[in-house]
Structure formats: C-alpha cells, structure tokens
Length: 193
Image 1: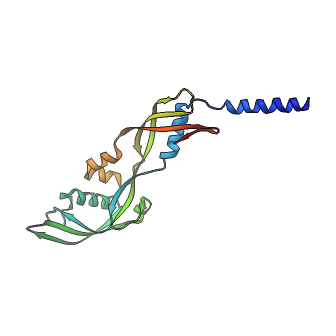
Image 2: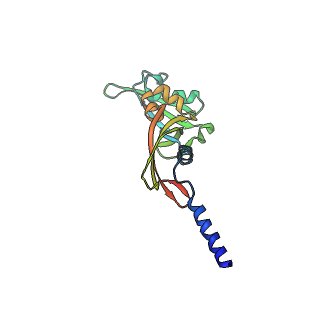
Image 3: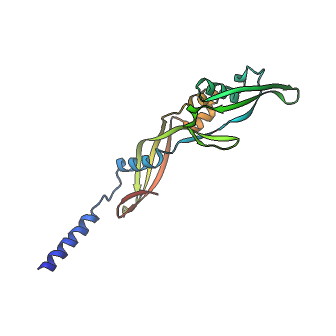
C-alpha cells in the first residue's frame, strides 16, 4: 500500500512538472527579451585626445564641420573640455583645427571602453515596445518572436549627435525598429536562443 502511494505521488509530481507553460506568451517573451537586451547600450565611437577637425574657416568656427559641431555641443553639455591647439590653412589640404578633446568626470560614466584614439560611449538603451507576433512548431518546443524596439534613456552624448550628425544618430537610435528572436522550451521554461 505504501509503495502504491509513493508511486502515485511520484507520477502526480511528474504530471504537474510537465504541465508547465507549454506556449510562450507575449508577456513572457517581452520579459525575457527585455532582460537580455535592456542592459546593452547602443554604442558610438568618440575620439578623445588630439583631434583634427577639417573644413573649418578659423579656429573659432568649429561648427562649420559636423565633427567640430559635435565636439562643440559636447562641450556645451559639459561632456568634454576642448582646447584649440592651432589652426592651419593649406591650399591643398584646406583649413584644419587641431584640438585636444578631454572627457569630463561627468562623461566618464558613459564611457564603456577606453581605447586609443576612439573610445566607445553609450548613446541610448533599447526597450522592447511590444511583441507583435509569435510562431512556433506544433510540438511547442521552439518559437519565433517578432517585436518592436524603441530607443529611450538617451545619454548626454545622444542629443549633440542628433543635432550635429542626424544621419548617424538615426542609424543608431531610430524611433522604432522591428526585430526578431528565437526561443526554445527547456524543462525549466522558455529560453532566448
């Protein structure tokens, strides 16, 4: 009798364990995707140290060049300190401003990788706006999820980029994008592949 009771309990537990979530819900897919990508910032390369800005009229006219405008806007946002070292004009090479660009203490928390000559900074963070569709096989062991990403939580490096170089900004932090992910069902639930 005791053996039959133990067997019945063991079978009941197996049945209960197997009755876990068979289908991947939109809310669970959004949660799992958000956990994966929500902490990964969109990266952009910024040159610190000596920088040459081409196509400027004089040493005070950095805004004539998109690169110079970006550095001037970063300076206004207190992300960098600029020092104009010299200005040259060569008939063959054109006008150039020679700068020293130093990140401020405020900028340091957005610098992801310090490299020479270009360091990687965080521009913004993606957010899963909505899961737009889920398809899977008949056995419910795999699922393909389509979703929409939006870019928010902009860092102070984003607004100057948008103003100085809108094409680069739009390529990195467009309003929304469609994306997709694959999931597999394991004994402990669904996992992003």
